[in-house]
Length: 550
Image (cartoon, one colour):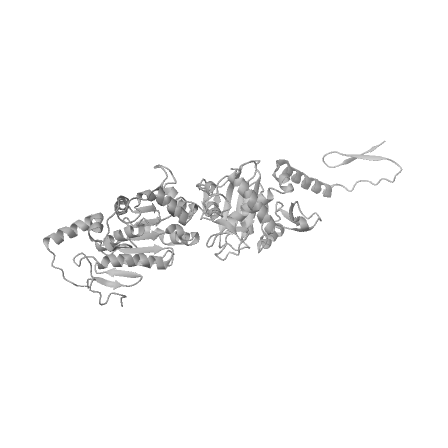
């Protein structure tokens, strides 16, 4: 059963025969080859002031249609109220009409939005002349199918929405507003199928919404030719001054801009009309700084889990800060290896995985610590991190696991071990004071270029690490596991004991103390002085003591 199809005289039924005139045949061929001609001659849209009117394309809309028609991958950064969805929908209608057996997906951040876009296409279809239409096989709220075998569906942007399907074209509307975790899942599961074809197309269209995956794609598309990080997308950008104030009216001007800002805000205007990649004003790191952060290709990458950016260097001091999750495909177990030899601090390596069991995690931490000059290890122990710390201490006997002493009102203090002062634990508990200090220091380190951030996952987390309920945490649908390792490291840099750890001679002193303890435990019993004579002995350096009598 089809919704809204039965009884609709504007739609062509399957099997309907059309006696084409010679002019109609010529026109049909011309439309099939020229989507701009087809749109301007036969597509009708709804105007708020004039009702149903022909779609007269503006210059920038013609450019969009032309680039979409002649390229496989398009990314468009467009302002609000620029007719971007209507323009793309008109091209999609041309695509399914004049191509046999193609499948198209309209995906938006919400299913209702995707279906509303499809409804525009259906409306435009109804007003096509019958000799251009294809017979309707299916006509539903979420999909339509034509007699030529072509089909188009509308759904939310998610991996499950079109998993298992084969699509010739995917239209991603307002992709910047799709949560990062959903966008990542979509591209990891669906995107390879789309790109495996030779003529398949992906259209990514949106207004900016912070520094997220859409931003990453845009940066990659706008890199210069020959750049290793340049992607295959053809970028399209439209400025608000290119768009008329209203259909058929004058272009938007400074007076319109000032009025729009008065009715909204300057920040909203920057994002929605200037198309500036403005993050939330509540992000820990300022937007201007976030925009300067660009990911770097790691030297080594292991299945998106362990990335190496700097090989271990002799005489360098490294710290590993660990955030432990339960390995249930939700939060990530993560750690960062930080080169703290000198400023600016560098991320030498990172681990990021949401399925690794906590019992296996210590094996990786201990191994990486050994590779990086026996790196100091700080484990966050709020949840099951304590279990990881215990395994590192008891099973692996890792001597570089850092302890923290709870000093009552003085809070937690980084310490060298169980000193007897306060309650000491193997690791740190993230409390409100620690997080407050850590966030403040991290902001200073990054914004003052005292810490280099070049990891893709870290940059993504920082762009969504926002102020919530008098603290900072990941925005909805995002993660902050790697970010929290940097927060704890930043807190640690303000601890007096950290300054000792960062000095290279401290480690040598620890080794020397261990050697002295061993030698002392194995020295000969010696001689007993009865008090009548002063005895002195000398060790020959090999096996005997010589007794000197004075």
